Length: 172
Image (cartoon, rainbow, N blue to C red; front, side, top):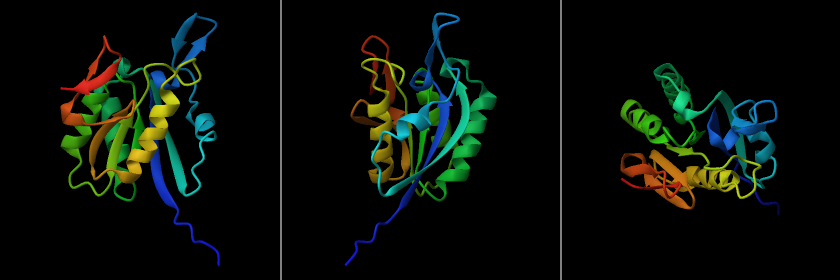
């Protein structure tokens, strides 16, 4: 008798931020130049999950405009009706975007998870792959709401803030 695998879908919306930054040899700086989440998703073993990636933008969150946040809102609103959504986002304004999503998307049926990194994917001691993996797991188990998932912790977006000295999120 063969086991039936129930395939679930998770939408992954990428907006840039540190999680997707790379080192530019031309400028000598870490910048958002190319999307690289797909390469890291291939390293994960997710046999019963279909991840649908929507690369929305590739910006440092400090450079995001009100129009960019409206685009994130419109995109997430269109996807969260049928499946959980994970948004990769820069940590500096992640709370701001999360609170916008919470205010403007009514009656959620699935969770919206915001995650990112303090150190880019691929860099030594990066927290990016851990946070991405935890975000995908959280999308499967958390109740509907808007959450920040970083470093093994879950925060309601209304109760989170980034502590720059500690390089992590804490309760607000």
